[in-house]
Image (cartoon, rainbow, N blue to C red):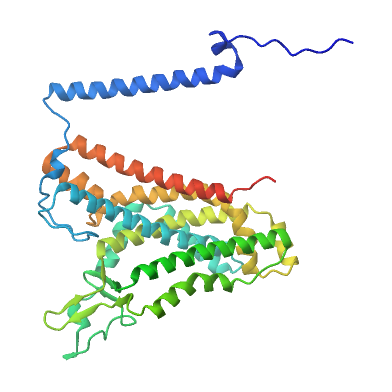
Length: 409
């Protein structure tokens, strides 16, 4: 018998880059990338050449000049003598604030509306269908204007919250004694930090970590052993450490309720959510929530009815079936389009100028651009900001998507 010998290894030749299937894909990718780089380089060089002919030099020194305009809603200290850079930072923080608030509220509205649209109750299902179709088929700018008109029409002067019938009655008109909706916006309680507040925050973070660790343990026990542990320990783990820290350190965190000053009829303490912020937040949330509702409904319908019937046969209640069986599987269908909705919220927030909310488009891309005339620099910074935020959202959501995807054993 003759022994089989290994095939002789073929030495690498340049022709293999085109004719060998092992290398052809890399060659094509390299050629495409080279053409893209050359095209971008040509456009950039052409831009600089045209700017040089016109005597225009790209510079960002204008960011250090005084802004000269006020911003009503600001998360950091700011005045009209602050620089354009600080004004841009204020606008960026305002954009991130309304985008984060809208993502949270839109997700809550979308999940509830998507589930309720599949309800067996005819009236509830039809009401959710009307909500979804009404908001999905009307441009968001129109809804922003409508909701801003509604928000602007309500609210009283702070004087009303102090004087009623000629007598001084502080907090007499405040909801639960802590919320005041005025013609300036909504006043909500704020949190005062005292000695030991760091311990309370660390306890809260520890509670969150323990909460998810317990949920993971419960899921592991359910899948491996079939035993269903109670859910109340998760909430005890979540709130227990922070409650204990607040009991041991009573002055660490205090709630500062909005209070009316009797001398000038003004509201002090608390946090003011201005009317433009409220209008934009509600418009973005309700509008995007309609799209998320359809994503949730599609994800639930993608799960076979046999899953529900099998879970019911095991004795699980409808709420448990939705939380433990349907939604975990539906997340694999819901999350990819949900990422797009979060990106849409961030980009649609640039319409804030319609209600007078000072986001980064209104500050850097509006007033700063008009005052300095540096259109190219301002637009480049705007593009870089939105590109960074969009890529960050995509990376984080894709990491979560990978954690819930179906894993082969």
